[in-house]
Image (tube, rainbow, N blue to C red; front, side, top):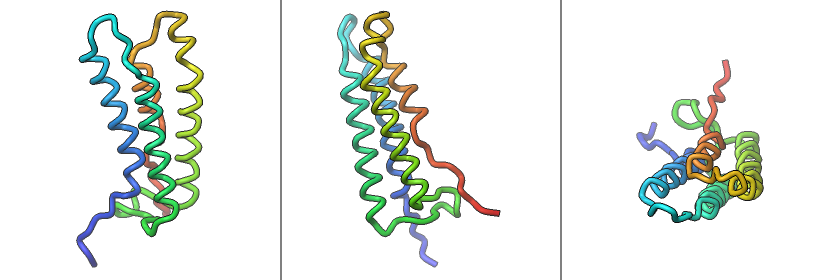
Length: 125
């Protein structure tokens, strides 16, 4: 039994979470009246997560990790890729509506990312 904990399956969700925190910090420290590139940063974070999913699907890090609490099998990777793709489509469709109603803020994009893929418990009884 090795004492190594493989955290590669956590990487896509961690990238999305770090991007959401970066969005909130970007809004907090932006100059008043400026429009930070929320959509660009969000898409970059989601694209990085999608790329890490592609690497996970080809690598040898598939299977259950963290005592079976997180699964990185084909089904889980497919659903994460699907959710990331839907989040990307939502990001591309929402800026015009938000600008029209003067509601474009970083919180919207951060909330969208926080509801994107997260690891689910896939333990079997």
